[in-house]
Image (cartoon, rainbow, N blue to C red):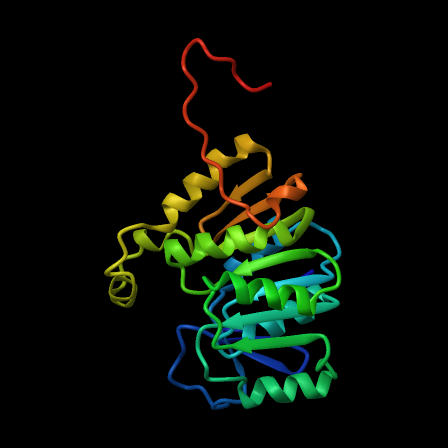
Length: 249
């Protein structure tokens, strides 16, 4: 799946594509002629270990930055359609645009800038416009705040086909001690750890068939979902059963 990646000290390569590894080194010679990749080999190895061995026809990603992960997913997963959104309005980088043109991906890879991941109406419209069948994979690498992350999950999880997976990256940010992380999340009162616990408890409802938690991401597999819950899906956290109550079988 990720066998085409070649890892060097300060970069990863796929053919002639260059992914600059972050944090960056001082002796970089390519300027902006690269993608920036905030995923280490250890991180990608976790994807290779836990991502199901299946055909990913339709992939939706939250968070674009300069398009590095989009290029990575396209090269390694070879989806039929790959769509991503980002809150920023910076637009596609020159390197990304040249990548799309060189590969002839104008109809297969689409980016939407200026889209809030908590904008449920816009997310639904994009999915319905761009995909002609259920999603196989959703990757949330956007703001990592509790509220928007939960809203995106509840909006997009029903669009997955049964057996497909939803990934939330970088959930354990509250345990990181670097200054940039503390500043970015300084005003957050709820963390993604709380969302992980809600997802764990919601397995009781069986709409989440399984949950994989690693230090890099959370991966939720979609179980059966009644038709009347598709447009009004919520994470269901059951109340604790009384001692005399019946336990689920």
